[in-house]
Length: 344
Image 1 (cartoon, one colour):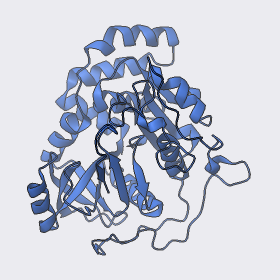
Image 2 (image 1 turned 180 degrees about the vertical axis):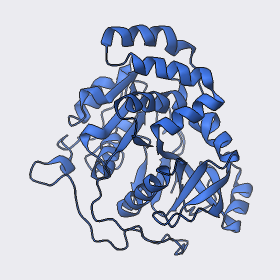
Image 3 (image 1 turned 135 degrees about the vertical axis):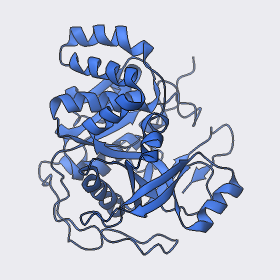
Image 4 (image 1 turned 120 degrees about the vertical axis):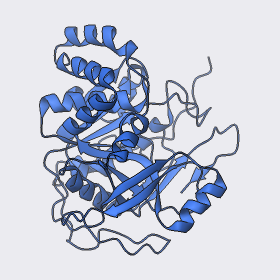
């Protein structure tokens, strides 16, 4: 088998945010951490916070994928999140770690990945604590991956608020991103599942869409709205119609919620999946019992995205909120053997 071509040379693996000479909790002036979008969406309120570290906030980074979207650069054993596609000396998963660490800490940053990627992730992220790398024995889509992390973290901290962010996103406008996540945490404290809706720059067919509902009126989260409903990835004409209304945002699959709230809702809609994940989590700290639980339970878990399992039915019951945001997001959608389609 021909080996995968190497990624461009990565810089020093240690994240600059955890340099011993730099305080972990960074500070920013309490003004304009939000930047207006090219669409002129200036209706959003800047979210002020002095310290970016959010106590009790845990980051979950699902790092899955079959390595087919950027073939031949990415392969099954070397998916795109391990590549330095921005040519900045950091892979996509390293950049995701760097972007989120100001809001949390290494102790509260977790990754869910397939066993074949564990070694590479550890090499690229030496700050990652061994107990915070959750290895799944086989791909079961986003609900099982995020649900597993939620179940383990709920055992460790029943008050945990988790935020799930893909390992392979390329984001511009870090201040706007951090501001949106911080606001989403405030909404999650009210027992909502919260997603982040990105202001669309064009009628993309690569994203699903979120229809904005009424404002929630939460003082600590002035931009938050209910999710009216979720829309699957549309064709170009439908996407243009969505944008023309001004009431839709891109759905990038970022979710912030209390771990226990997510598990309780999952139990309402998919009880067997929720029970299986909780059983695995209960055995997690004992390596022998963990392996037994994974062998017995994991193969039979339903393979389903978190959107279909929880977000969509919960939105119908008024339990899902959205924080509109204006940072840029880039997705690589196609194989390099064809033209590369990019969503910005």
